[in-house]
Length: 96
Image (cartoon, rainbow, N blue to C red; front, side):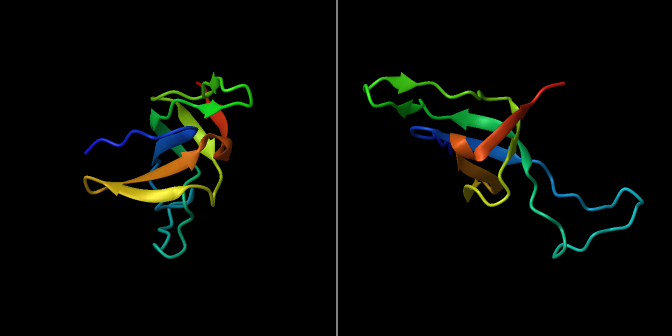
């Protein structure tokens, strides 16, 4: 299945949850925090401003991003978990 976000929405594949601490201890699934980092998979066409012009999004497919902990909606596509966010819920692009 293919999912094409509309408007200013962005489809993100969340990074895997941390299962170990930096010291090597395993974290139980109930104590694991939701990831706030992921990879952009697809983007919508952008918002329409007051003049009726389409404003392109700042992110593109393939970008690594940080996003809000409680933003977006979780969706499952072909058995994999994704997050559908508004562009405003993305805080930063991670550059190497």
